[in-house]
Length: 238
Image 1 (cartoon, rainbow, N blue to C red):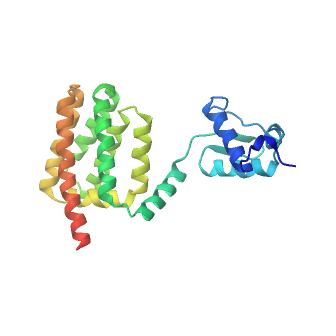
Image 2 (cartoon, rainbow, N blue to C red):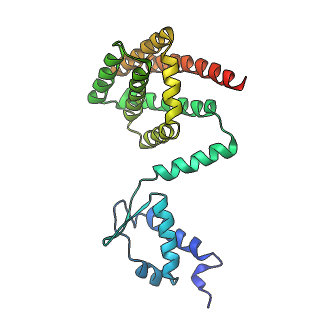
Image 3 (tube, one colour):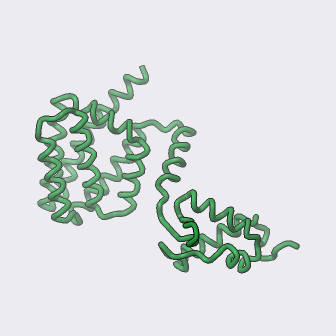
């Protein structure tokens, strides 16, 4: 007999909507234990197998964690699933690195605007320590790693969780490319010096809570990087 609760929906859609409603309404919160498969199946009038299938899908997406002998819990660890999804989208749409660069530029601009107000003394001190290290003689590869740390701290100091999430996702997605690209840029002493100055400019402006100067220094920084990226993309297309 058809289940009238389904209202024409497929069973898995109905079950998925149930979980979505429970989370979005706040009935299920982060780290809450989820009712058993039997309890949910009885409540919805569907088979336990249907519940199990949807819970497995949610586990893959990082929204549910299944602990053997303990039960199922609401979690929020979607990074791996998001990386795989975005990777496939990039491949299908043939998205290139310049498009991703401009996305990154956009959210780091937003991060700087926020950081001018929200960066803590501790975060500013960590930025300072990174920049002091970058002033020391080192290989381009070592400098590239510190450059990445500086930008991570810049985004972190925005205290915006979505910006931090997207920053982490893009860095994981393009890990090797970003490392190689930064290394190539910093291998040129003149470019490395220009970037070093722009980093210090961003830092000093944040310390002074001077948003216009922070944005000016950040814009200068990314224009240097943008020119190099365009040259690199041109070489690869020739």
